[in-house]
Image (tube, rainbow, N blue to C red; front, side, top):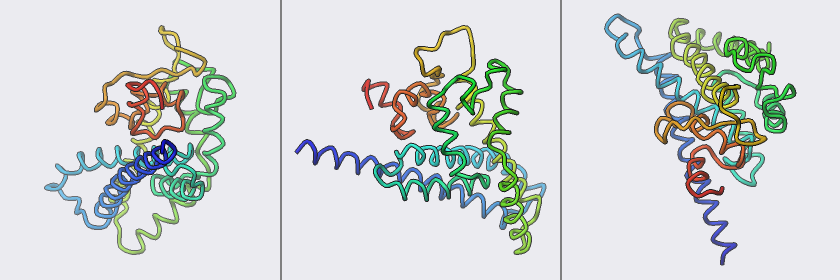
Length: 247
């Protein structure tokens, strides 16, 4: 019975994660296509642009976090093909990123966190966010990413989209999400500061509180140390690892 209960609990958790991910993706797609193809950028409509861009920035961060869960197999436990497919789609929608290139780099981050061998860490500038961000960007940028973006951009314009709408509702949210992911999900948790890291994971949790933690980086700031302790736990369950003291 305990084995059956474990399987049912795992399936329930996966179903919850799938529903949350579908909500993030659905909202992102609605703003993306609605903003690019149906939103008139006039003086009167500008009052809606800033909140829509901010929401789309947060949803773009969410797409990345969904892909991150796929990398760890926590989106669909035991279903490698599902994780791979969803992860590829999420990163492609977000900014034309290559999931298969990012996957080994992310596992290298977990193996060598906070060292020179960590692709997400700048050992030469552990307290300097601007130089660290430049290295972070250079690690994951690729010419093929730009090619993919240009192809989609050309198609969008071919079917009637305005370049300014594409910039406002895709390019700007993607770039802001990059900053959000870097600042809250990489720099703050792994920077060198006056406080000592709690263990060999060289990671700290920002202790934002549950709601602010979700708003800033889908729990990867507020519960970053917990993520390194329990990398197989989905983002939305990270607070439980602290309160329960286990995954």
